[in-house]
Image 1 (cartoon, rainbow, N blue to C red):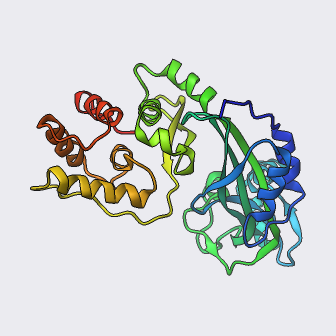
Image 2 (tube, rainbow, N blue to C red):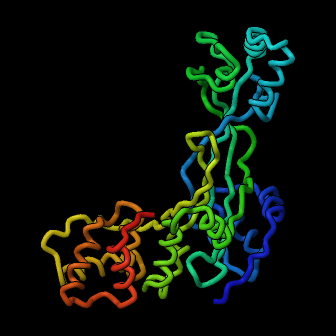
Image 3 (tube, one colour):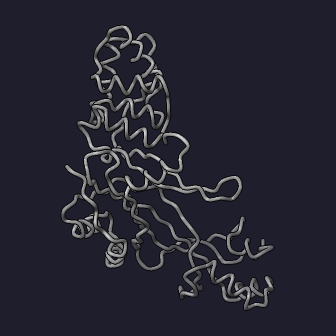
Amino acid sequence: MTESRLMLAGQDITDCCKKIIPGQNEDLLLSQLQSLIPDHTIKLALTGDEWYRLGGVVDMNNNRIANDLIEWAERTYLECGQNLQTLIDYSIEQQLIATKQTGKTLYFVVQTGDLAEEFSLIEIDKTHEVSDRMLVNQLIPPEDLEEFIDPLQPFCIESFCFGHSRYTYRRKTDVKMFMEVINERSPGEHPVQRFMDDWNRSSAGQKHCMSDDWIIRPFQNTGRFGETNINVEIINTQKTNLPQLEDFTGKKGSALSNVLNRFDRQAGYPFAWFFYMIKGRQVSTYSAEAVYRDISNDFAYLPKRDEAVLRDWIASPYNA
């Protein structure tokens, strides 16, 4: 496969999400996204863990007061003359309820070439809104607006849903282009880039598509001086329960080779044990050291390309 540019606008994905009411699975969304890019194959690589964020405001009769709790609280606080007690009294009198958005992020992958980094990642949130708490806990009223918006000791109530679930487009990442930016900012070779480079030159890269088992996800965090840092991480999407490879005491030669080959077969591609060693805790680094001792003593069960990757790691270890 030669690399081909993915022509898919974010607005098209947004429109697609708005037209679909989520069901028990994501088959309908997947088919609609596929119809937007008939020359490529799109697949759902991962469904993330559940998260939640602040929702809106409703009354006891389920009437919508506001979609955005933060915006409503700040605006109403000003309308109350910046008097917190007035805002509290009003919220209690109206028996207002705060809602929350719960959701999971869906990660879709579109492979655009043969190399590990030649794919695009599409992130779509699947959310639904539920009641969370009374807006004000009368027993422990808030002391400032921040605590009013997100109290430490809320008066929680039984949850009930508002409307139906929805899909919301988050972002699309061309991994190859994104990694070019990351590499420019990285003082040395970024471990995620090295992971992909090692994949491309190993037996794994010759036999298997990396995005079938691993995705590259951008993220941001705040530095110690308050600055926003953009970075990237590798996430394993494999659903197979693979064994832990930790104790290599006394294993060498064919015995060691058999253990690693068995792991590779279960993972579905050659040299898998190496990449699970680089990322995660599935495989101990003792495995690489044991294999290196073997190949240094004329055991030749690794292909030359994998042996070269291993020797480079021994000379300069890294974790992704």
